[in-house]
View 1 (cartoon, helix red, strand yellow):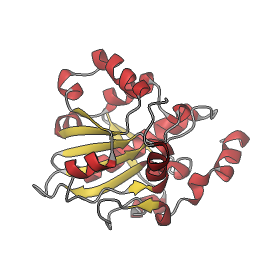
View 2: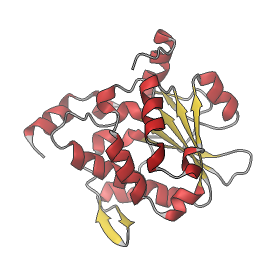
View 3: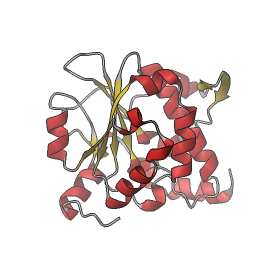
View 4: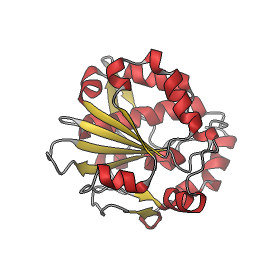
Length: 224
């Protein structure tokens, strides 16, 4: 990686993120963002896509691993896994290595899902506190969607987009022709933390402090 990336990593507050920055609004969980995969410590994780084994560059994506979080199972059936994605910690599109970093981050998330999801799962995407330069472009979303295997697509029970901006809702609407109707109808918008609590009343979903503080100070403005 070049000097541009190294400077970014050294200066990025993402490198210094710890459990103290995570605010478990609903309920604390031991299966949170600080959990470490033993294979990751050895730097040997990989995933298989279209029968191709892909080694994952965990060192490069180390500042961005907090993008992914596991929140256990839905209490109602104890079978459906809850997965959280935090947009505020996605890579900056202005990085020279952005494409490479995004690919590696996708492989990392894919690896996590393959090991976590046994039956159904729901995905909770937090868009609050996510600037536009950290929001992936539509072409990346299309590319990654097409790479997801049939099992993960089929077992996806729902996608909950928390704090969607008008811009994001427009992107999702425009992207509808590129996704299946079944997939599109799984998307649900959540505008407040209270709504999220009602949707998942008994489940541990960790909300980063930056998202909670941004929501309280701005009262969620549709400015993006």
